[in-house]
Every structure is written in C-alpha cells, then in structure tokens.
Length: 152
Image 1 (tube, rainbow, N blue to C red):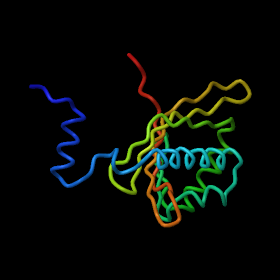
Image 2 (image 1 turned 30 degrees about the horizontal axis):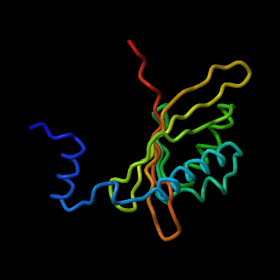
Image 3 (image 1 turned 60 degrees about the vertical axis):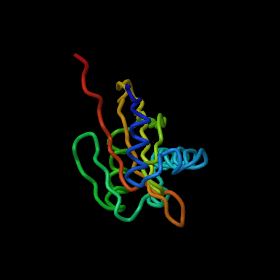
C-alpha cells in the first residue's frame, strides 16, 4: 500500500515527538507572518531605518542574491538602505506559503520583485524568511534572496 507523503511526514513527526505543522500554528499565526513580511516591505520602500531595525532579531542575517552575507541587525539595516539607493524601484513581496516546522518557528516564501525604474527591467526573485516568535511577537531571524535559475 502506498502511503501519501503528508501522511508519512505526520507519522514521522509523531514518532519523533513533534506535532504536525498544522498543530503548531493557526491561521492567526500565518496572518501574523504575512503582516510581518508586509511591514518589512513597507519599511524597505520608505527607507525607514528604525522600522526595519524593529523587525529583526539581534543576530539576524541575510544572504542577498549577489552572494553577499549581512550578519547582525545593524549590518542588515545598513545593507538594505544602501541596496535601495543603488537599486531604485518599487519593491513588492507577495507571500506564497507559510509553514511552521516547530512551535515559534515560521518559514515564509515570497515572490520578490523590484519594479525597474527609468526603463530598467523588473528584477524577479524569491525570498525566504525564517521568523521566530518571542514575547514581543514575531521577528525575522534570517532572509535568503534568490534569483531563479535560468530555464533551459
């Protein structure tokens, strides 16, 4: 008998002592993560250093599409503001999925587009956000920005 993948994953999670992801979070948590990513996009768009800073854990990091690592909240803020100056255009992030691998941990995948300005082409990427829940709410602990691989 062939067991569906999700059933296998749930069974392994139960055996390992972890509740299935659907039991770790509810729709309210998914909405909170989508809102967090939305606040991040708005803070980036307005180049608001304090608003950006407030969204991250102290030890947050980011791997940008060029391969550069930014480590620590202040390096992220400085890098993001510099990137916005060097790469003008409207940034949008549309969350496509949120999952909760364990309580207080969320992974959000989003389509990330920088609309070209002055005739420049749009830059289309993916961003993955690792978010942690604390007493003060959800914060971003890591971001991974990726350019899609070219299709053959």
